[in-house]
Image (cartoon, rainbow, N blue to C red; front, top):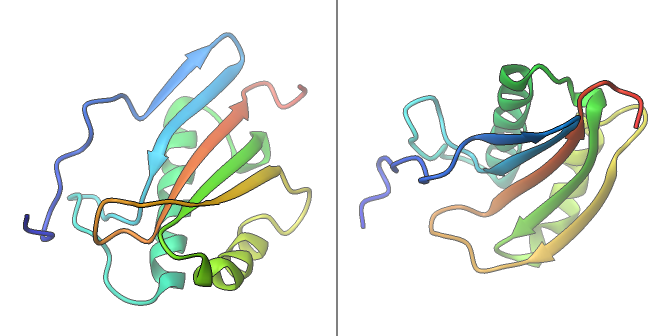
Length: 121
């Protein structure tokens, strides 16, 4: 399989049920679905940028995020994930879970996000 570009998964970017917003897993791809190259930090920051983009598309903000589940291809990246996480949520942080998982190559991180749209869960 070529890793130059991927086809978006056959799922919506998000699903809204009442005030609950569920994002499909976000990875480090650019606007043309090409994986970002570089460090783990670059990939994780791009995955979070994609989360922010989908949140905005759904009418939400990063402050509306209730929980993030991160899937890491290599748990050795856990300290690097924590560095990126801290930068993404400098104030009140959502709940989180981090899991080691076999991801589709070349991805090292995938983010699963739950948000509340009116900001007052």
